[in-house]
Image 1: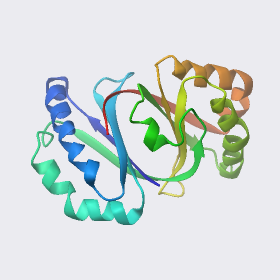
Image 2 (image 1 turned 45 degrees about the vertical axis):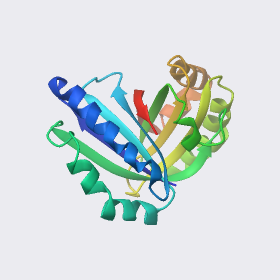
Image 3 (image 1 turned 90 degrees about the horizontal axis):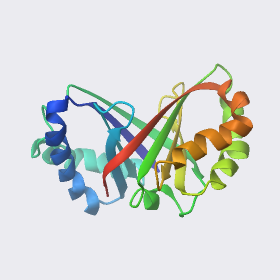
Image 4 (image 1 turned 135 degrees about the vertical axis):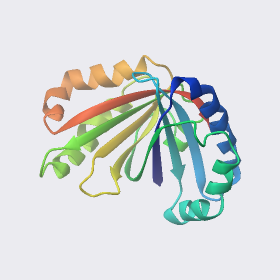
Length: 205
């Protein structure tokens, strides 16, 4: 699975315009290889719109970019509604356990998505990946309300590792952060520098 992460800086006067433009992307629901998309506002920085898109393969994503992306974008209200954008691609390393089979299903009913971006210390990637499998995955699986998640790696091999977890209610963010970190956190934090983003979805497809 290919994950596309889009982060836009949206001035307050353009929030409604940006949101209306984002709804136009519902056209993607019939695109071959498109697994789903969720977008919302960063709870800690309301000027930041975060969109997570899921694709079955590189080929499906490449076809979308070649044939569909520009007509959808140019025909909507989003051009000119933001003053900065970041687009990054991520490869899934493994599923993360939860109440549903996988994250494409979870984002359709999720009330919150939490992104944990971890900049790893030199030569600690393998250690961090093992910790994900042995500590974080079992810990998240024990949290009520966690639907599913994905553990991903930036296409830049020297770039960050990423966790994305879809939760039913906002309080589940505390379940992940407090319950798991309280038991195992000090050792994990030393492996990297995590930065969390909690996004309240406005539209999921």
